[in-house]
Image (cartoon, rainbow, N blue to C red; front, side, top):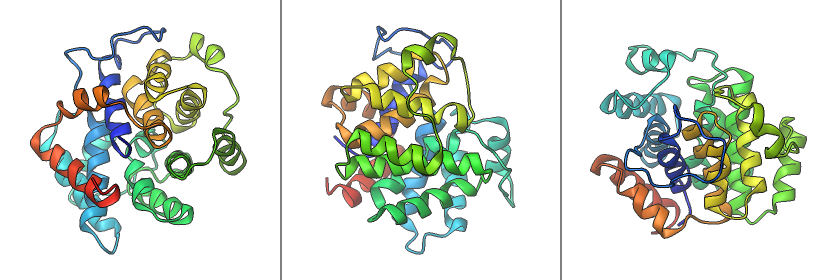
Length: 264
């Protein structure tokens, strides 16, 4: 399966290792305590915005994020984002965190051109993450997904991201992994997540790469997995396990977005 399932599965598989990091690719892919986190909730909030708002306005996006976020108050939001979720007049707070990148995948499946994808990614980020690095993290991730779903090669994706967004995607994971730790900034997590995809030979291998860095595992895997799903597709065994972790509310949004963007 392709689509936003890539980010959702990355989040759920990585959830068990977010606060129990590993430095190996040899780990249990399906721990019983796996769960969806804020990465999945906000990914589906963005998806629901794209489903409901023909005009694609910030106000409706904010509303959808606040509505869905309030239904899952224990999903694991960051402190400033938690405050934003309940604010009567929410305003962007200049964040450069990787939350902008982990929730962006729906725009890459909704957009019909790369330019549209970039504009939607920027809009999806700047309602909270309006720092240039926060926007860049979202736009670069969405661009990579859009290119992957449109059959660009890994070399083409790598060159485009490096040339347009200035990320270093050449450092090998074996050189990143030893000293890498929990990191929530876009600038120190998005390039590493994209490298996890570039070095992989499958969706599962991408997720194992992301978790094995020992960082913010669910978000790293959500970002890397969102690109890998567009390039490889997600195996049915992984899809089945992760979809079973969604409740009816989230599953409905997921299904409706797939019907609109994938036709299934």
